[in-house]
Amino acid sequence: MNNNCAIVGINWGDEGKGRMVDLLTEDYDIVVRYQGGGNAGHTVINEKGKFALHLLPSGIFRDGVINILGNGVALDPENLWNEMQDVMSKGVSITPESLKISDRASLLLPWHRELDELEEQRLADKKYGSTKQGIAPFYSDKYQKKTVLAGELFYPEKLKQHLKDLLEWKNLTLTGVYGAEPISEAAVNEWVANYCEKIKPFICDTGEILKTASENGKKILFEAQLGSLRDLDYGIYPYTTSSNTTAAYAPIGSGFPGAKIDRVLGVVKAYSTCVGEGPFVSEMFGDEAEALRKAGNEYGAKTGRPRRVGAMDIVATSYGIEVQAATEIALTKLDVLSDMEQIPVCVAYMLDGKEIHRFPFPAALNDSTPVIEYKKGWMQDISGVRKWEDLPEAARDYVKFIEKAVGCPIKYISVGPERESIIVMD
Ligand code: GDP
Image 1 (spheres, helix red, strand yellow):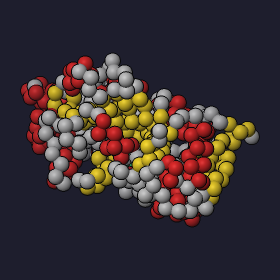
Image 2 (cartoon, rainbow, N blue to C red):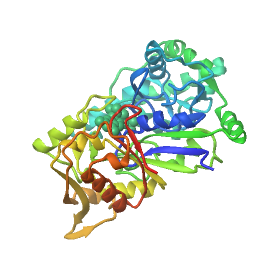
Image 3 (cartoon, rainbow, N blue to C red):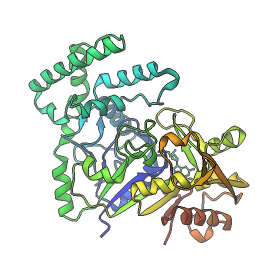
Image 4 (cartoon, rainbow, N blue to C red):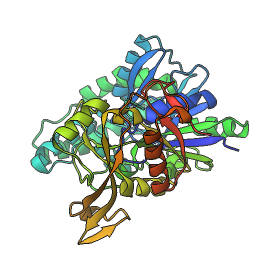
């Protein structure tokens, strides 16, 4: 049937999901973001320009595609409105027809970002490496039932009282725990008027839209943020994000709990990168790492932070595929390896004197060391290649080796950031 597809990250995030969603939206009617928030940085390069999307679904550039922010996202009205202004200023039209926000999405409130910052400061050298977009405080509050649903904007009097109650509670934490200044009710009301009112026309019952669309045979694309190893339940806790990055969460976080997902396209980078803190077994250092970072332009789309880089990690990738129940893979950034004579691949870990192939419990990761094998490089530019048979033999061998090692078919090979820089496998 192939009506619904989830595009998910298999590694630590930044795999190139945005470019894959942008490519595939041609065949889909609806694109839904179902978790995460402004901490994402999905880079899309197309005929309209170069964009780093944080909250907006990557289908926003295609005419006729409906883009949905589901109930599972951290809906930051301020960031979203600013991002919409930025994208629209580059000639992209965003209307209540092309963007729909779930009335059940919870609002990321002004204090969430402040609390994120304050907690990272308190942790000092034990910090989690947060993007400081307020995501962890937001999700904590959501599960404590201490935030506001987007649909409450249609009940202004109730909303005012609700925010007042939440603020009273939150100021206890701001002042008592962190010694920070309290936030005033006037400031919150001003923020509501400035940003929430702007996004109000886009808020609706998106569950109904998804259900009706599905009944009419429309195709839905679920766009995930980050990757398997950052999943709250399955990732490298506590260096995870605070939501579920897995395809399994897509029906819940999108507002379509009965959705059947026919394809799970796992996006995997041809080498490894990891932003922020946490264990990273196949990490490379020194000149070799610096050369790879430069070749891949590995600097965070949201934060500009240099990404940690490493060898393709077969152990972590196999686990990531299992967690996502991926049915196929898009292997991205193969072109970045074109200058390497020898390409390192982490084929196993050594832990307690034993070679292991199963991704271990997070606490054991710091004691794990990589078992590296070197594969022959191809030493030529492949960014113009569009057919499998035109790839140099060494590049084909590298791809085939990864496919066999991780046990999942590679359906796409990306050789550049542009929409058309793709090899589609038969
Ligand atoms: P996402 O968060 O998973 O969407 O990934 P990001 O956008 O953070 O990171 C991917 C980066 O790699 C972006 O700068 C993309 O433009 C770029 N990119 C994606 N695919 C390719 C590729 O095949 N080759 C090269 N050279 N760059 C790519």
